[in-house]
Length: 403
Image 1 (cartoon, one colour):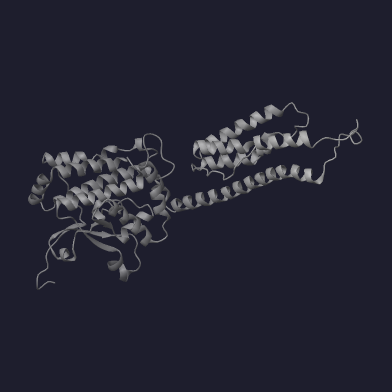
Image 2: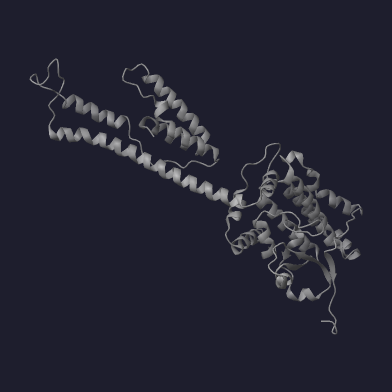
């Protein structure tokens, strides 16, 4: 970076908070102004626009990464302080004698002490310039490493799933190029344990008594947010979230359960142990609300604030909070009511995410799938009907003879 750009670069980074596009335009304008100022000088042969090509290329690439450029930690002391020093030295010290100053030579006699004083400001300028170059070089290395680390973590996801997450995170006709920062950190996780801890920590912050199983965390780590098939809720669904308010004794009670089988099979002998999971559906309205709130938190985590599923789930859970007595009556009338409601919400979310997987922008999808408030209206009007998939079954209490 040339010295005449130091002040402009430093000011632009500070004012624009590291916006690469603003910095690029500022540098171009400063180069044009500098060339125009010195263009008439005979010894001005190497134009600034040629000398600064490397810097322009770097800033251009940095602006394409949509990442803030870090400020340069330097202090510029030009030109007032050095100008005053040079002025004093010129007036008091650079006085040649008649014997040494001739028409053919303009050399002056300068003592060693005065020479050292003259060299010192020039050395400071040289040090400052080399420091700027080293800082820019280090900044380039750090920014490239950070960009590569972020891109690799998201690139491990299949292309169709990448498109699904980007479209689901978008607003209007413009598709998001970058996903939510928290989701990016999740996809960077190297182990299932770290990923599970991150997801369950989200529920703890919201005081939600739910958790995500290890099998489902593995699916989410690779962007598999869709159902495994049309009959099995999987991926991003309330049916596969575990309620922590269920005690071990509850598994011997009657209720509705989901038989879930993941894709991650190891061997024939370990299929039942490693790939099959039975998840108990909630028994109460409060537990169902917790599950749906957990699903809303996950949608916000992966798609950012204000996405369509989160808005629909917030509307539905608010209505549930206001109409608990009516929901309790529905549960008494139909023991399958809670599984039907949760599977219906999961299925509509699955249909919308399937469209996002193939769409170019969110405007090409049927956002009515995420209007879960319409489901609650059907419940209030006694018009709600849903057929449970075959993987959802009733768990009966074991007898003494059939443990």
